[in-house]
Image (cartoon, rainbow, N blue to C red; front, side, top):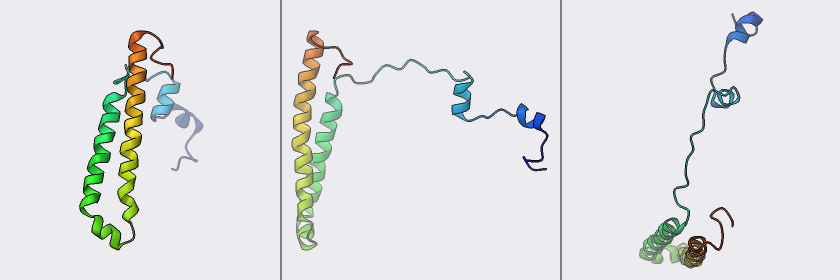
Length: 108
């Protein structure tokens, strides 16, 4: 018997088990989760390090990149590294202001 042929009572008894339906019925509870990193500084430093590694890897293959006409790829991690330094400056300035009480942690 297909779902269309099932009696209406049996279909009504079946509960949907997807998370959205469970949340709508109040069966799922959200735990209070605190932010892991308010400053953002470790994340930005990780990104800067990854751009530096990407530059070194591409620098090793620069001759092949030039042969393929892709030598501009070498400048992408340089730009990422530079923008990461700007982001680091911003995050440090923001975190200092938060700790000094000049702005709230949720304000941006």
